[in-house]
Image (tube, rainbow, N blue to C red; front, side):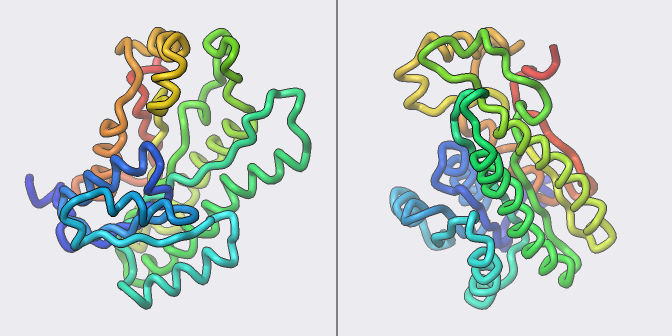
Length: 259
């Protein structure tokens, strides 16, 4: 049982590692004895890992996945430095935060590139390396709003309703997961995705408690998620405990999408 969940000697890349959910994933992978490459924009990944102890198996890199040419070069460079990854966890996303009637065609296209195109290019590049080696696991990130529409009543002022382009992009991630699972399945490369439910950031929880209460009231479990509750799902899907699971969308939403 311990062996199934162990990530010892595994080389895992986490894109979006310095974000609210990404940080929890990196910490759990570290505890599971994986070697983790934390990836984020600017210097965020490096700043984050230096807040952690026992960093021997942690490293950081800077990548803006919207630059797809750079993403392709990045994969080659990192493999040359530290070898091919056994797992890729990609939390990339894009959104304008604009209201429905304010969204322009240019906004919509930019978000599709930042959320869908960038995820496709990076995961395909890594997936093809895994294909050659005939092993690997990819975990992409969708959202509950890739499957259901936001209820406007939850988003009273000053909160904006979760934007349409975000949900459409996250729906695309679910289909991308299925497609890539079939594309790589016979090469022993798995691809799954996680759809988080309400996981408001600490700042939102502190500054907008009424909004957080409205979110919690939509959840059968009666509360919002804690960041470490996403980490367990990601570590599971990367591990051998999920060795016969591919093409799946795992909701971690406290039951939000159940009613």
